[in-house]
Amino acid sequence: YNGAIRDFSRFRNSAALFHSFDGHTSGVLSVRLSSDYNYVVTSSDDNMVRLWDLHTHKCVRMFEGHNKAVFDCDVVSTFTKVDPMGGR
Image (cartoon, rainbow, N blue to C red; front, side, top):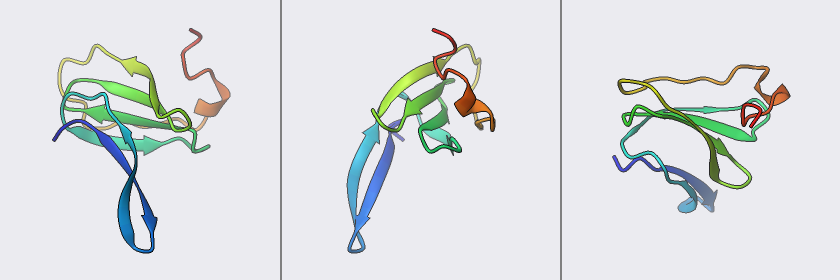
């Protein structure tokens, strides 16, 4: 595991790398898509949860402080109605 999330685009049944979301330093254990398809949240063996913007392909927020690997994550249904940066 290299900690990268990869987005593959299919064209004529041929897999081609479309985007890469690099940032986790260990294996990614969970991926969840927001209901508006604007964000992805990932959790990892590196004790980190990250929020990714699907338009810029950048990590917009890191949720630190976990003492162990984070095996699962989720996006609440009201997520798109709040500032994903947490008011920052």
